[in-house]
Image (tube, rainbow, N blue to C red; front, side):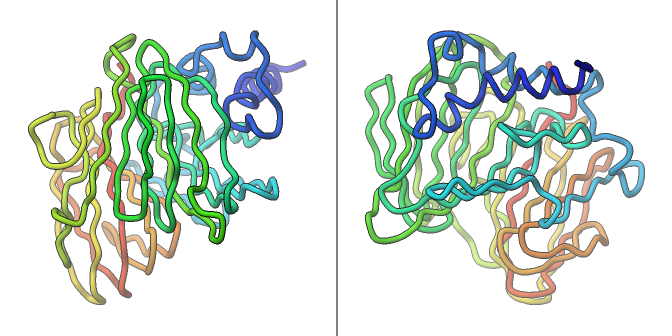
Length: 294
């Protein structure tokens, strides 16, 4: 078996119990594997996007229809990066950004209790509500308009289910490699209704507990923005060496001159700032992350 297939099969075996626990219950061997090590096993040595997908020396474009996808009946998912049974050596990560899953979960269905460690996990519901329960004693409903974060650290177990029995829940789940391993696990959740601004990007995540939004163990900054057609704005990089992965949730936009449509992803690095223009009414998520994994 060649190395590529070996890595692919190993990752699938390790993730199937934790990612799809309602389909197949993870055995003890699966649960003992580290989430961090499973996901790191596919990442290239320099942690930069594969050169084959680079449009110029500092950008990479991922069109929505080129993402990995799966339909499990109760779950429909699109993967921007290699995950579970989707493996693409050209799409393993963008710096420390390792997972960007675009999920739709059927009414009352979801992920049974499963383990994670040493990952920063961010969930952003786009429609409906998610019922969360974890080994730290947290039980919560995470709804559209909320942002949830977990630092898995030394290890957590949690479950996630659609909180409604009459409508789907749609969400983005984002995993980042942390800059500190084996920290004490933590949970946080906020509503963005008091911080959101029309036609501007507003911060929903940073490395600093005293900043606006949630915080994580990583030098990352996330911003959301809802824009009317033809609105232009500029984004400035917070930390030298970071890049930004932009994800168009709704609408269309031009970022650094690149035309983007709904659910397109676009990464840019080696810049200090860049321009964003909404070409239709749009909602855009900017994820600024280190390009090197510490």
